[in-house]
Image 1: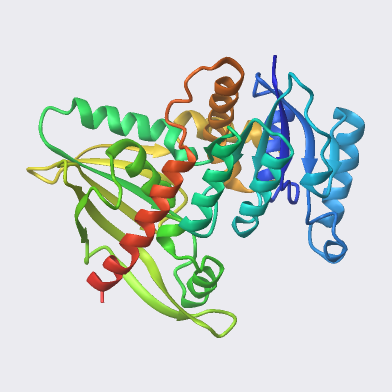
Image 2 (image 1 turned 30 degrees about the vertical axis):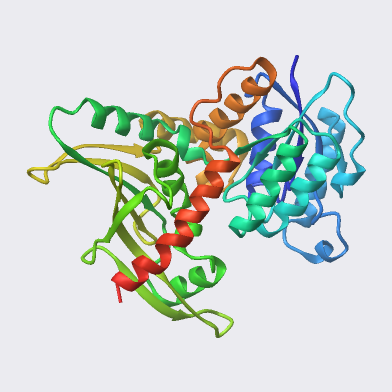
Length: 364
């Protein structure tokens, strides 16, 4: 017995996360899943015919139709109804703004479970409506917060739990933008929802999942002024955007948990768990994503897949593990440990919206 997978939002080969989900499935790396259908609204539209990636997508589509028997559609509503015993999983990997309508359509066509890429929806209100719609039909919704199941997180948490003294844990997320006003301004505009609802949403999901952080449990938030930087820059459209290019802060909860989050748009291309001794401030351990094993496997993946986005390869084990956990859960009932639910996504988005004005005020 396997889950039959519908991929919604394939996007351009070598460029889009949806396409990489398809590659992992087609390579039989998710034993409990078969990719059956792809729904691609954009590249079947008239407007896309002159867009980058159109020809590449159409060539790839023809190849997969012939080789793997995948059936392609332009709309979710065109999917055939699932057979009586079919366990249908929809993977939604589309633009965030399109997700509410796509999830509604997936529920309406009878899917049993949904894997929804983060953050899920632009607003808390939309995410809550999506959860309610899914719950009403008994549809499980899992979120694509891949860092939740990453080895660097597990190793950081285990080290901190077993450390003999009191320690501070920081989850640092680096991006690789050039530290120029022009590049940061373009970044601010393209990710106009802001750093906490976009780049650092992964780290906030970790806090919600593993440290009991919600808007109601936060007792104090303290920005690290030395590390952090808040800027107002004029984007390519001429509109001004205020956002963080670097940010570090400590969250304290009413239960006594303390955890640090840091994000640097120009810091590199890794994510790191850093453990320091609370008394001395000395670093005692750090664990990175990608880890050594993942780095060693990158040339093999590149050779097989081609010149795809680098983050597909550095995060390959985590994307794979998420799909494996989700499909094991819906096919065999095995617990999907660490996989964020849509309730976690709602709490995460609430925390992002709550923290942004507080941290901006502290850094003025």
